[in-house]
Image 1: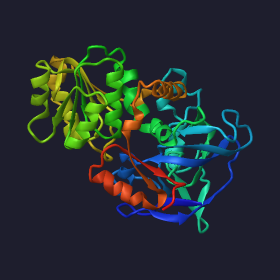
Image 2: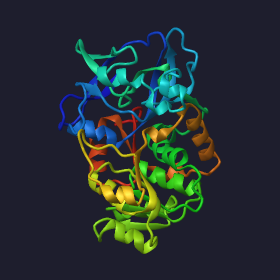
Image 3: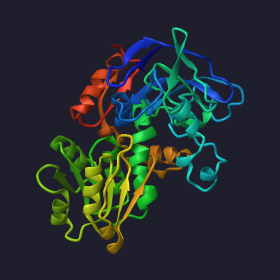
Image 4: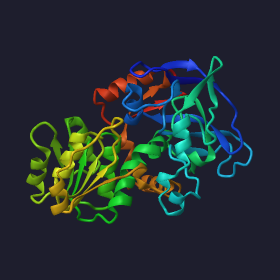
Length: 368
């Protein structure tokens, strides 16, 4: 099969013929229909985050099950599925306590570059090629653990289904699961990429007001307004916290950082009102740190918390998000950006770095 392989940080991915083994017990073979162009993959492409090489990246995807290994009960050939980069084992301490986004089974996939048993199904020229977060959907097909797929309704648009698997469940999920009851609560979203825009949709969904979005790109802010932002701030025109207080004099109740940089987290913290909370949902480079004024944190009882994968119970929340999309409550079609064939994946990432609007999607089955 064809796959995009990263062999060296800082270098383009190469489209190669890669061998893919048949699924073993508890695993499924999926024909990839769509894969989202997520900024998280870029961290590994640049070397900001380390990984085992060579590797097939891609963690935000959707497709159709073509075959299953022994003992698979969750899906069957022909099922349409969303691919999940955080499997849920269902029995570890985190799964048992309602925090499956922190499932310990993911650690083996991350540390080994393999699937749940620590071994890879990918190879090229007799050499091992590694999996990325147990998914590796920048390819025509992927073998995953059955814990890494969720069945969805037939006929779901593949590009929309792919985005549900990361950007949407991360952004909307962070609002639903961390903020919770948000009617009338003031919200700031730092960053209007795929995750930030999904956070905006989540804030609109729960009735937050005002919903303020800050970004460097005016065209991204235009899309943010379409998706529920009531106010926007162009970063670089002045201090973000001062612009926020021109809208909310006391600061905002909640701030979500979807960028993953120290300066954006600091701006989010500075924009909080007394008792407010910043939720960090964007990944940064390895070892990145954030300096926060200690007395401001204590005397004003501000909070800074993290949210991985939207703190979601994906097995129940992914189908629910698709129900809301079908009902017109989440305008996920508006979130979609340009589509690319697999052979042009490097062009897609060049466009992402240049500030492309919306979430671009790779269509492995499309003609080059």
